[in-house]
Length: 327
Image (cartoon, rainbow, N blue to C red; front, top):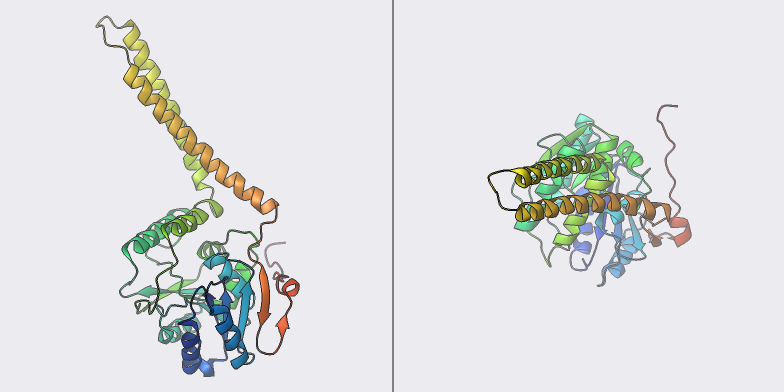
């Protein structure tokens, strides 16, 4: 098995069948395996995916999740069921053309990268989606050590080594690019075309983009806590300055007016700073609590590949690769 392609599926009954057909038309000689993960779609996507698993006997794996967990969680579920030497992740809406798979596979095989990202000639996302991607890449650059100029696209290909490393993560808040940046360092990119969606609209709302940004912000770096500490120092310095000004007004012979406005401004600034710091710490503590309580990363209802169905209890038992770190 050379190439596994993971496709998170959500409300894609009009595209997923055509996409899988096209992938096998182009890459049937590559030892291709396609893993489709239905993230609790509200349409007939699950039925179509089950039909694909039956039709492409043993070459399409259908993973059905018990509820909607989100794109990154669904992708992690798909990665856990791949067998290929290289694993490619792509969307289900044809914005990533199947013809662009070959350049990514060629690049990662030729240069021995751990990960090769796609870089779009002309992005066809909406303005707010592009803005969210820009913020996400900015955060990854400063907090996660992303190389400057590398675009973190959801359309990427990974080596088996990289996939095994990120599958070690068992927490409920996966951010795949953050995991990759923590685990591996051989990163490349290839320019590919980007098309308009064939049907429907993106399920990425502004709230989901902010949630993704928060995952990168709090799950993979302690820099925000250090920023909170600096905000606390800044608030303390402002407080000292305000106290000094009030003392000066109190004893100044020039008869300056009472510093009520200045005092209220200082109180608002200091209160806001404290709320930011407490809220940030609360976010960290809340995520630790959810991890301790065993919030699942994903729950698989069933797995089918056209040859046999797998019980949910078996599907949810992920085998973690043995550690190869320093002993």
